[in-house]
Length: 160
Ligand SMILES: [Zn+2]
Image (spheres, helix red, strand yellow):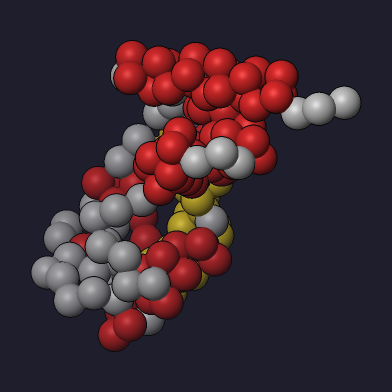
């Protein structure tokens, strides 16, 4: 029986809303305020605690009704979007992004300048990217070696 995208019964919601979901806890279903969602042919009438598997590490995590309300009503995220990573991986990815941004912003001045603190900070940023298992272009590894040489040279010039 067709039930208008699960309007009257969360069990009739299209499963693509939770694509990759391992388990849907229908007992947790909370009615959504679809007037706050993005305009879509197929709204999410219910939020349901959904157990998903992280596409990076495979760990299971729960996409909760509270998070769904936040995503689709407060933040107006696309109704077809849902988290693909566990909290740990999301945090690591955010950190990686932050490091990459810092690197891109500071590398030119850092290499040119004489500040040993700036050079050490940049070296640490590159090390952080390496530790995170990020595949870095050779140019960045080359800059890491250059920074090490510059740091050693500046240190050797400091008297005492
Ligand atoms: Zn993960």
